[in-house]
Image 1 (cartoon, helix red, strand yellow):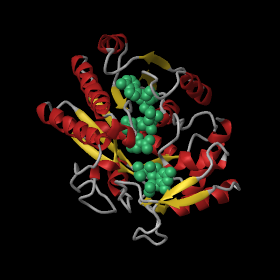
Image 2 (cartoon, rainbow, N blue to C red; image 1 turned 120 degrees about the horizontal axis):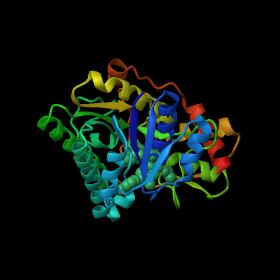
Image 3 (tube, helix red, strand yellow; image 1 turned 180 degrees about the vertical axis):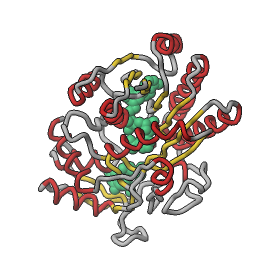
Image 4 (tube, rainbow, N blue to C red; image 1 turned 135 degrees about the vertical axis):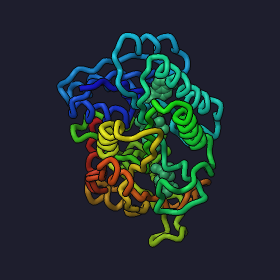
Length: 334
Ligand code: NAD
Ligand code: UDP
């Protein structure tokens, strides 16, 4: 049995990962400032798993003393670091906020870890770090950093920070997980993604249109060089992402230094294919219209997910259909 500190553990991906960790016999301690989640989520994690969750309200940027106390009070074996801001469009408007929260927050976390001699961490990065200099399928040998927005650059900088940390001290052990497009929700319908305001991402937008809470989905571009003219992404069930973290945690001790892995399905799905699958699986109509291309969108993004399978034993299990059903169940409960 070991204890994992989960930053951002009441958020979308963090909460699903907490469930998988508890189901696999780990103890967890959640640290979150609730800027994009609610403390109630901890109770829902307990309801799903029948296990206790220790929860602290703490901001990684500003509550440095509290963070130190948390490390003092608990015997922590490893950290999973989900806490961060994640909106590309918001990061373009408020870059300082993004650099402060995502980079400075991570620096504070690393300082506390170093002080308390906790040197194992799994970090939430993104496929966005591959940027525009390579093409799908993306694999981990490809260069990173040619990123077009501040959010993606904060992920790149934190990846480099971990590289430098591991070069300076061989006791640090870091797994970087580059997520492709996590969607779906827990089967219980008790936890899922709760975007504040009008969502930027495709799946939450589809769900809200299907529920009648938004009027029409605008499909950004219909003349891409893809089979149906719309962009292609690698959608992966959030439960698979969560399971990928558990595999990373059990594999981390066999690794040394910093290691990066894609978490994707290796399968591309177009915007139209996702809408059609959603309509079929839920029997709901999603009103759509075609609009202009969205600035910065890459036409085709999907993973080569072989490395995570070979080295961590992780392979995504669920298909688009289940992702749609689970997203819709969550929408109906929200
Ligand atoms: P989320 O917003 O649902 O969860 C993030 C959590 O972190 C929230 O609960 C928020 O309150 C908390 N938080 C933010 N800043 C904090 C701070 N300074 N101190 C303490 N808590 C803080 O987001 P998510 O979708 O669960 O994403 C988790 C991580 O995965 C993020 O780092 C995100 O950038 C990364 N990621 C997400 C996606 C995606 O599509 N959802 C894709 C790639 C990478
Ligand atoms: N998309 C769309 N309409 C929307 C939101 C997204 O057509 O309202 C498209 C977007 O152009 C992209 C795909 O859906 O091709 C996935 O977008 P999302 O923002 O979810 O993920 P990302 O582009 O960041 O991978």
